[in-house]
Image (tube, rainbow, N blue to C red; front, side, top):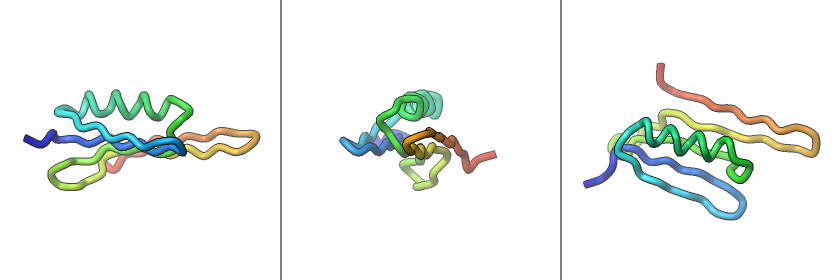
Length: 74
């Protein structure tokens, strides 16, 4: 049986994919990825419909770091 949610994280060294039964667990994992320095992008998607629910993007340069968490749901 396929789990409901997929969490994806992308970094220069490796990408990760985790599948979860609950949105709460998926959100905790996404927050860990976003709060770390390794991953520049991540999101949660529905494994059954392909809908992307939320994610983050990180932009770093020599002087600043900017991370944006976003959601497509209300």
